[in-house]
Image (cartoon, rainbow, N blue to C red):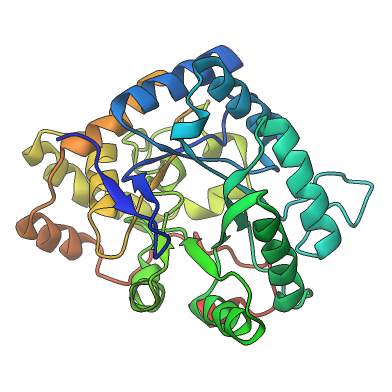
Length: 336
């Protein structure tokens, strides 16, 4: 089954139903392999690429821009990036969602990407110390100037997105076109409020972490050492996601994948891509081999019987691992 295209919210823009995430490009993945991954994804039908300024402190954007310059396909790609994370440890204003930072960050991203416009510019995380109208006015100016086509959010609670829609309506500003939430078979909390809300208001959904940051890639086994090259062996902060419940889900899903003749990662990715309200899950391969496996998810059809079996392993709206991260803002409880 070939990769399809879907509408990105109410924009009228069509994007592939898999989005290539470039988080690893230029630092964990060498430039040459990154270029090859972009070429392979485009050849397979992927027309949507997502990165962020904070990935490799700009290196991912540089390599993504270089890849598109080499293959001459920039005009055919919906290119997304994000701002919010710190880009300079010595400058307290080189982060966040203020007008000052947004304008500077956009100009820097345009230079690194080697492009005149960003198709989708996203607020990487909510910022409760900055009024949303401050952020939206700055983003609206960028849209009106032609440097940005559409705006979006990432890891926002439903009420925060609705607040942004209300402010945009009241002030006559461009509204957010999509949300990028964590959503996978280890954390299904987006189904409680977020996905019904986005469908109601015509907002696209491009989930990050559809493979649980690699936990659903088939490499993790209960009682076995962690893969040395995996993020959970390398990052103590991320290891809090590796709970006993994760292994329960993995062990419950593996027979379903085996019965369908696909890998655990392909089953997990296909399930996410075929959930109601989802536009395009973001795959974040580190190697060409991982990319090939991810692309194979396009051939996996999730049936009603499959959904019933999966729901018996992890119920709708349930979670066994925290992807809505605690601690980035004072009102986390409102997401849960």
